[in-house]
Image 1: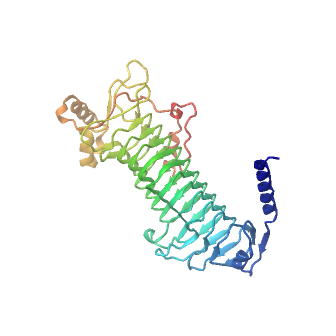
Image 2: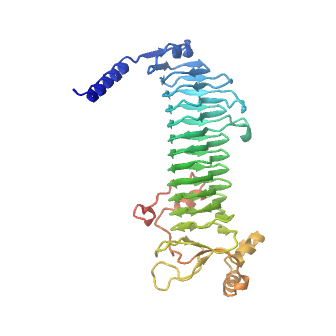
Length: 442
């Protein structure tokens, strides 16, 4: 056997020996969890039997803390209920509750401190903690399938966040259900992360997301928040297949972002569907924007973006644009234009593309912004005549979003089910996008 093979074989044998030497310790109600941690060796598993444990637990070595039949760890309203101070720690199957309430000390149900890399928090209930999880300067952390709720009795500004990521790399945040906190997900200076399948609700922001690059946001629900998904001062983001609905301010906020892709999302029933502010070199493609007070609010020099194959349906105001020059929308190929349910043009050759450009801001739009009661007359012949006259006389024209080749029909999606659910006060259904739709171009 050559020296390299001998070295590899020896390493594998040592690893197997170390694994076989890992012990399982079991803690019963009335016994000390901290003492069990201090007895454990690296790689051991501590099983916590169902019961109630008063603990401000510090884990300072790599191990697994596993609940049997969901025991409760109670911080007693002081400090952190669990503090992770070592890498390669797994926490699973626990109820973790009642941390302290000091914003200054950042009290949390689980506090993962700097250097505690590769921590895993899985299938836990974190309830009545100031911060559900605080993760700082710890890389490759996985947070999976947890339920996180905050201190509901506090005003929103006095609560902590459900999950806070600060200065991390490679986080995987999957399948969590977070609500009744300040911000469900607060993400700052955290890169190469993935956020998938989370439900974020009844908070200030579903996610408050800043200064973070090369991240994926996919298949999440943000609902009944003040704001759904807020992306601010970021770049190289992929935001796709998410649903933002019933948020009082915006569904998706894009503020000062570049080089990102926002595609195949459903944005429905919000105050503003898409709020786009100071955005450049970003693609918005295949999104369904339906039943919002304002479909998209575009301002602050947002330009050089690709906005194509989106559907704007039944928004009280489809597009609100504030800018000094026309902003072109629509792709280079026929059929890449956007659909606007209030488009008044025609399609003489039946190719599915409007013969006249769609213009968002005309004289009627400006008057309706200044005099909201005028919206009661928008369908009247006199107002439609005013709209046609304003287009014939350029002196009355203002800078606008212009889609040169708007699509006459939306993509085949079940968007009508949204309106029906709203009328019957049901929870809005998941709106599936037809797989045969051109939205799903790679």
